[in-house]
Amino acid sequence: MISPIFGTVARMRVSTGKATQSDGRMFTVVVEGFGVGLQRRAERRLTVPFSQLQRLMQTIALQGGRIRSISAEEVPVGSEPQASGSEAATQAATQAADAPADAPAAPPTPARKAPVSHADVPVNLYKPKDPFIGTVTGNYSLLTEGAIGRVNHITFDLSEGNLHYVEGQSIGIIPDGEDANGKPHKLRLYSIASTRHGDNCEGGTVSLCVRQLQYEKDGSTINGVCSTFLCDIEPGAKVKITGPVGKEMLLPPDEDANVIMLATGTGIAPMRAYLRRMFEPSERAKNPEYQFRGKAWLIMGVPKTPNLLYEDDFQRYLAEYPENFRYTKAISREQQNPSGGRMYIQDRVTEHADEIFSLIENPKTHVYMCGLRGMEPGIDEAMTAAAAAKDLNWSELRPQLKKADRWHVETY
Ligand code: NAP
Image (tube, rainbow, N blue to C red; front, side, top):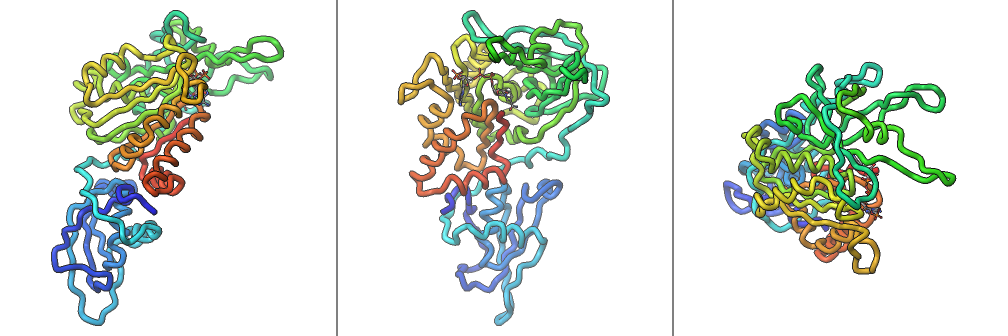
């Protein structure tokens, strides 16, 4: 069964008479923000027979479209209703063929701006063969006394070239030096931690949040090549940068979207950029078209309190935007889950599963996950139980969310 909200059927205001399943009339739905690419920007008219109307509306709602009006046309007695209008109308109805015909009506989705056009997002402006050479302008530790490991915030000047990006993308870094075979090192991708305007809000910079990778092998400590290169780098150093890449983690342009963020450790990088865009005063001043007023809920996992990243900023946002920002921590080595084990973010998701699931049922809600892949099974388990409590099937719903561009995952 599909949730009435995942399959939101906008309350119908059919212009003439009462519709029945044997209704032979054609219905024209005027919709905005529906389809792919440029189609999403345009108002579209989709004409379908009554038998396909409900399915079409569910599909529109799932894909974040906004129904402007529905009107019925009389057809001559005895003529067979045929789907007409664009191919997409038929396709849309077909895609939603699994949806039940009896989904109850729910309020129409509120006004939304068209989602960010993926086609407009810059990718691969600089490739490994001809990388951009950025200059380090800052490199400082994000950790406080007693933290485990090293995590640094590193900023590069981009002003000499054409490297630009949007929140949620990544860049590649090619560390200096050669590998064991005498070949240049390969690039490593890092999620961008700054907004498109950079930390100084003037543009022309990019920042990363990097943990130095360290592991034990045969009794000795191995340091990650690129993460060590970056954590040790000095201001003024030149660095080979590629990209930007990635369209999986783009923030919706809707100012009233709800954004649930699940991050472990340095997986906070894109979330830090989103939160700056939403709440940092200098960013808000820079973005008159994006004055966030939805709900942002960050669930963040770190091993110890001194490992919390960007904590002062997040506390400031909490103080300034208590109605819009919520912040839940899972501090694995200080807190315990109900089974007595380490508190991970999937335990926090389980704790708040019904609330999170209800939020997800709202078509304005997007979920972002970044960090360790290990968090995913627990999150799925929590959502499966929350869905089952409403007689719904999470394994059916999750792909629908993904398709609607509302479930964003970048984990390693
Ligand atoms: P970390 O400090 O190693 O871990 C952060 C927290 O996650 C710790 O509290 C840790 O707990 C916990 N954790 C460990 N296993 C977990 C599991 N199975 N499920 C949920 N939580 C778990 O974080 P980090 O070193 O910064 O690493 C973050 C990871 O994110 C790295 O693998 C990095 O490659 C990845 N990352 C991905 C992206 C991206 O996808 N774009 C961006 C940045 C980082 P304990 O240590 O106490 O067990």
